[in-house]
Length: 208
Image (cartoon, rainbow, N blue to C red; front, side):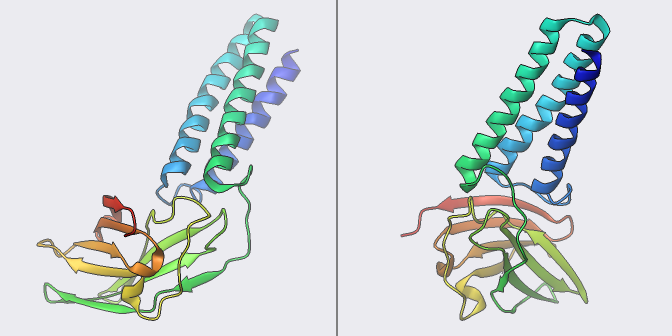
């Protein structure tokens, strides 16, 4: 039974870490709301499973082994359901990169020129990502924006950059307000710290 405990614990831990890495692009990006719930479930279940596995292996207890299996099946099943509810698929899938861009716009403020665009990666799929790409002082930054809550969000291709995105200055030269355009079928506003790469949602309103 100890061999069984070790095998299932290693398999579950490896699967959970792989899922966490895939969802967060190997921990380089922020998370949308649906992704955060999945990550929280897996992040709590892994140390809990490891603790129970250690106790079950040490005490050689079949009831703790059953509890370990129940925790893995429960947490794994709940994470799959969250993913299905958010994206329409049970498992994350990698598809070939398909990118649409808003085209480049310019913001002149605080004596600096900021060139920016919005990129939609794999729109309409489970692996969608949305990035604000900013260039200033000859340095390009890619900042993920939590625009689409799920894979079913719609949009129309941009004819002009402001069809998708508009940047507005703030008193801080390193902070801008980012607002979505009408062609994204949503109304969202973010405060973006260009120095830290941090995004804060200001508002999320229904389209009128």
